[in-house]
Amino acid sequence: MELILEQFPVVIQSLNIGFIQTLKLFFVTLLGAVPLGLIISFGSMSRFRPLSYLTKIIVWIVRGTPLMIQLLIIYYFPGLVLDNPIWGGGESGRFLAASVAFIFNYACYFSEIYRGGIQGVPKGQEEAGLVLGMTRSQIFFRITLLQMIKRIVPPMSNEIITLVKDTSLARIIALQEIIWAGQAFLKGSQGISGAIWPLFFTAVYYLIFNGILTVLLGQLEKKLDYFR
Image (cartoon, rainbow, N blue to C red; front, side, top):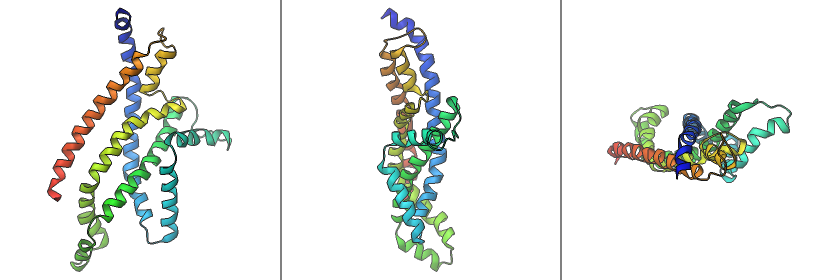
């Protein structure tokens, strides 16, 4: 116990640095995937069949393969196969590659949620808008989009919670997020080795952050109850 108390400040400082990296990846992914997912959903619902089929095939591939494989391909393929290491070296290059992989992966998942939400709005409301002289863009932003948001909050909340945990997969390309920081003390870091408790302690960070997100998303869902 005395040894753990001595190690505690060093471990916490390292875990905090790793958690900041985790938070950065989380927020960058949301910032990119939320709008990109909507664009992809438009592609999958397009009346132009080649675009619709191509989009659906891409979404099927991304959703049907592990995110870990996608991370490895996006990070290593340009350098090893194309002989063009576009990501550069160091932590910033690994973070950029991880961000691209996470954004595209989650955008494909979000696109299916968007598509279900849009198609779940009764068709009669669009027809009523056309009768009233509204354009299709006005109907989408003033009628469809608002009702879609209410419908997609629960499934989007689940994906966002999953994203928090999936950020740990970035360590496969040596991005030093919180799991990497905790595992380092098991292998040997800052004079500490063979310590497994820091790795278990990382769960506390995830539980607290997920708890905060659950409360915030729950409040958002309650505020959208007026659509009922």
